[in-house]
Image (cartoon, rainbow, N blue to C red; front, side, top):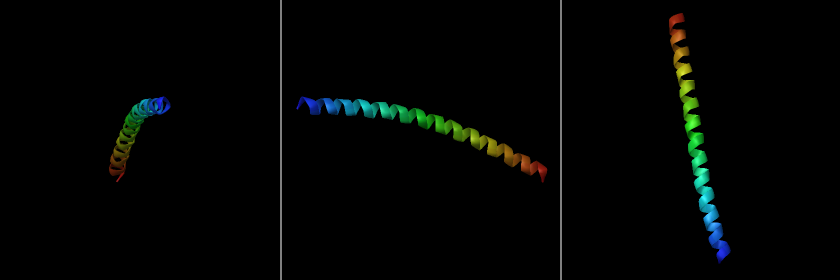
Length: 51
């Protein structure tokens, strides 16, 4: 019985740690996507000026 309790504790700790990592990864991905969108907007403006 004690083993199952320890497993539950370990799983809950791991899930919290994974959730933290996922949050960090999502923030990084969002920042990268925003930078790419800004580049796309600049490229669109350049093509309009060229025309």
